[in-house]
Length: 207
Length: 360
Image 1 (tube, each protein chain N blue to C red):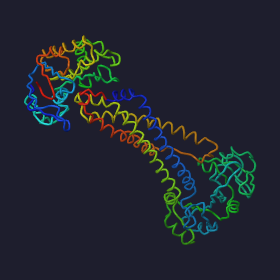
Image 2 (image 1 turned 90 degrees about the horizontal axis):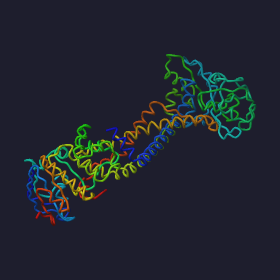
Image 3 (image 1 turned 30 degrees about the horizontal axis):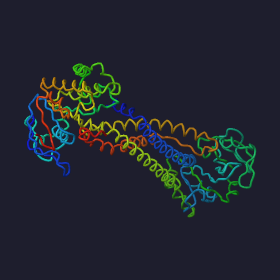
Image 4 (image 1 turned 90 degrees about the vertical axis):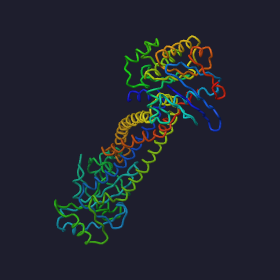
């Protein structure tokens, strides 16, 4: 699914990641843990094509990221992203926020997806009309609407209580079981235990 | 896309209203400056055009106000083949009662027919006819004092040309005594199908102290019109630049506040060109609505100005289709160009900043 070889990244002269090697299989649920500033968010940004590494290779299903011509299209068709803050657009309804990721998705498709997440009654609501946990579920729906092969989530439970956090991780597990690769960065070791595999990033290296 | 653009504009109401207002102010300024200066030019040129095909003024004089042409030349001009009639006019200005400047026209008797009488008779010696607009403002409706002479009001006329409707007409001899000249200009009517250029050449031969031009040529090259047009263009350009700067500043602030939105869009795989296009759509909507509002406001302002009696009808702007079209293009350009730089910057917003937890 994804192979990372000798990945190194610098911010100016500061080394953020050093010689990372990873192999991620399709349908795996991976947790990347580490302290704040350890480099896990940088790793997630690079793996999700949002940041170009200083050196090293990332191969997605036999395609080297360097050979991808339209990175926006590649990201749209293959990758879903969930942020720590839900980052929904306040002036758009739940449906319209999800349509941002896929304008062609019909109301029925969006309704079915929201039903899967247990929030189908929120389809016409606006972000400021729903709770934090519900917003994060909408953000998950937005990441899933394109049926991405990989979902990256950076501290997706950072602003949620323990019950909602557990619900989100349970959802990830469900989607991983359906074949979607899930890569989550978190500092919560107890939640990380729910993943199939845990990588710890420390001082830019995987231990 | 358009529905999303409307929602985005409504989500930032205060900024949208500020941009909308700065666009309206700029567009209204351009409309008013251009239409009023065009109105002045149109009024004066209509006045000249209604009087003949050829205009004769004193040679090498920059303004008709200072021109002095011998009225007796009309006798020789009338004999030229192709000339139907020639008439003379003195153009002057004088304070009347409390009004600081009133246009005063000394006209040869064959020109009186150009002034449509509402009441009374055309003037004889020591008499004047007054435009409807100025008549309404006179305290003494029977007599009028111009320079140091008193004239009896023999009639009232009405004219669509503001400069005439707010003016006073008297015999050319009376005007000549006041302004100490024979005639400011001579207008020549020519027969249909006659060769105007040949007639102009024949007129020039009569006297080397005069300059003859076709009316169109005169209007096109009249220095005062050039000055008015240049001033109008300069002021319009300043209004345009001020509006543009205002829009760029406000758009930059607005777009900067929406950086996280653009970062999310990029992380979702929306291309930079689509993001720029969405901002351009918002700008287009703003430009279009501002233009429509400014167009309506300008019409109301011009109508009000036209009916302010103290302005004597001298300020009379009209928005032509051509002017409206150019200002429409300017409005859209101003809105889109004003937002293109902030839009391009926004489209480059790095989603990594969001992912790494830097809430913008």
